[in-house]
Image 1 (spheres, rainbow, N blue to C red):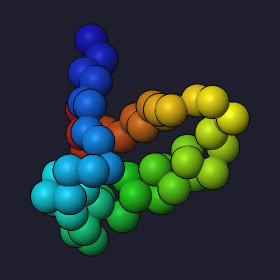
Image 2 (cartoon, rainbow, N blue to C red):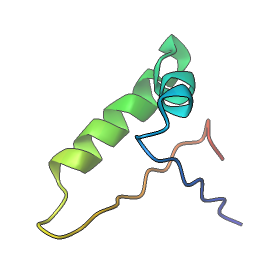
Image 3 (cartoon, helix red, strand yellow):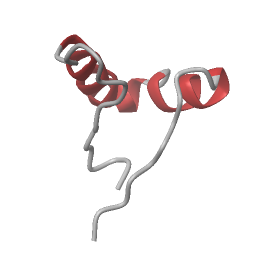
Image 4 (cartoon, helix red, strand yellow):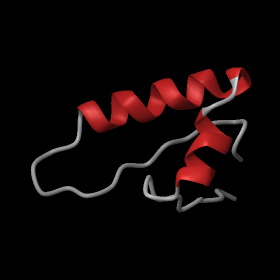
Amino acid sequence: MEKLFKITLRNDYAFKRVFGVEENKDVLQDLLECIENIKQGQDYCKIFSRMLL
């Protein structure tokens, strides 16, 4: 079963907690790659990481 976490980038605490630690460097990289590939009008992206599941 897939767990989906909804974290908004406006939530600075959650952002720093998830992406601000060395162990989650791969998660941050996935986020940046996802943002880079977002199509016009799309306001979200899915990020999959074993550390978050």
